[in-house]
Length: 236
Image (tube, rainbow, N blue to C red; front, top):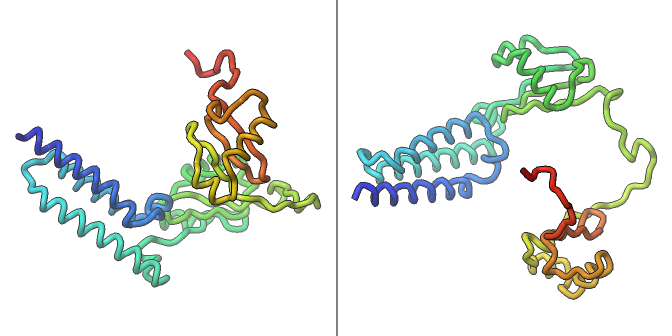
């Protein structure tokens, strides 16, 4: 009976963990703040106990998970409505480099080491500190960098080249399956796609296509099951 109970509790635990991000929203996953980190650790501990700790009643643990989730949702709502409370709940960005100068006092205040700063800059492909105008430690622990103008990449606008509007890519075939909803939403048909495929690759049919996308410049890109690569580099 213990095995059956653990199985049922584990399924319930995983189900709750899959449901919670849908309730709290995508920002919790993409921009995890200190508040989100604490909530995640607590929920993970409760879910683990729910899965295998049969000495604790599952109803108690489920209640705790529901309460923690409700508290997280409430804190997120308060942070959304109040800028003053938002900085207390989620934290606020800290300037690490200003005007090319390292802000030692700010770093000491948040216990951020120079090694961590140098590593964060290297991860941004910056190996020379003199390239940096501003560096900011965000709420989620990531470092945002603004390079000095002399080290910034040149854009088409800087060169005076013609600029063209870009569209959002539309996936037409995924894993060999035609995405009918995307075709319909964009006023396209299967027959049109077959015609365009014939223009690009003679002798190929939709059944040969693994992935197809209409790109940012309205161009069609096809990837086939048979790539014609004799010896893939990763093959061992």
